[in-house]
Image 1 (cartoon, helix red, strand yellow):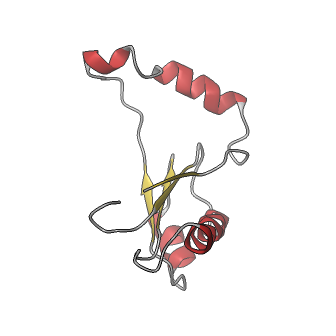
Image 2: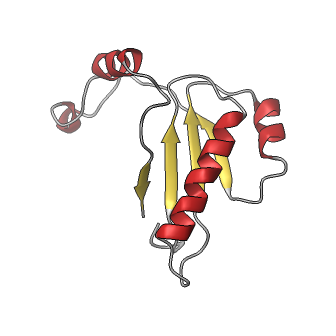
Length: 112
């Protein structure tokens, strides 16, 4: 993120939020801070996107974390702007891909 001057790690989970997801994301944040972050960069921010979440469980899972991590629920939508329809996969293609693969096997996408 250029304005915040930090890396942002976004992890997308095909299923519901589980407390152990925060530990995995914390691991990724530590790795990015150790391997990529410079002294001028702010601490890396983690964003965990899940198909569904229980707010109370997420709060307990993050309560003692000292890393900037957020948990959010995502929704697939049917409407896509016409100019993007040919550039992006359809919802059906995404759902097939998510259903055919193991959600835990993907590598995190690290972007600044």
